[in-house]
Image (cartoon, rainbow, N blue to C red; front, side, top):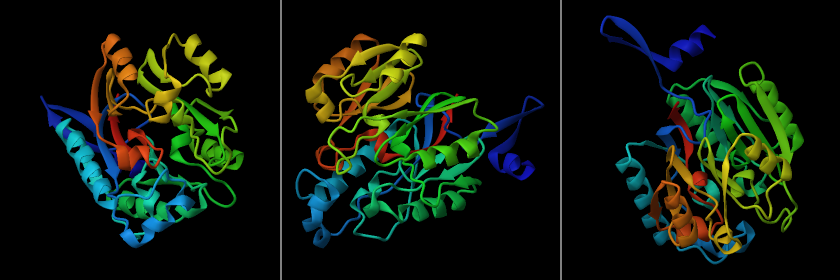
Length: 309
């Protein structure tokens, strides 16, 4: 524990007092985003013909994917976010740009997860290597028959986390993560997600909700679990309902950079208008290839390493 604590903080002398500066920890969906892991779309064209097995809408345009991702990264950097790249030489891993799924970083260290999508197994090691390189301690990992993807992990606050039980994240994964977090996270509970289109198409918990502030959230009510809606209402969270058309264009998936400031895929005019009406600053980016074709939004594209709260 002492070693983890020393790795977690740097000592800074300010006005004769010692101030501890966190170098990692992201037990929040809305705290000021300071540092992330991303992975460039390095897939090779010869693998694009297998787009159907990945569940994509059309054959990937690899050049456009690289352009869009580079622009996404530049927006993050322009907002003061430190961007670290995962080195992964596997050029057939089309989904590996979704770095939110193989790992999570808590205030005590990183947890390496285990992918529920068979084609994505192996991505975990690339993130583990990078996390260790960054001197972030490994708190634990999900293994065996357990599966758990980051897209099914929702922090309501620093001590409360909801885990979605989906076709990508099973109850064994929940139990293993609960055991890892149990001594420093007070409330850890699981919600069943709907069948929707079945195991062939990805439906994560974060497909259905994005927290924009402590009292504001985007929600797709047609698929959202009742317990989630009830919990938000008990907490006094205002819900902006995402229309079906904009759910399909990743309108429910917003990456919050700080309270009431978020990054969204371009083309969701109704959501943008509703957010701006509530005083939210919305930054759009083009994601036709890296998001819409792959049915993943901006939260999927980053593994948060550090948020301030």
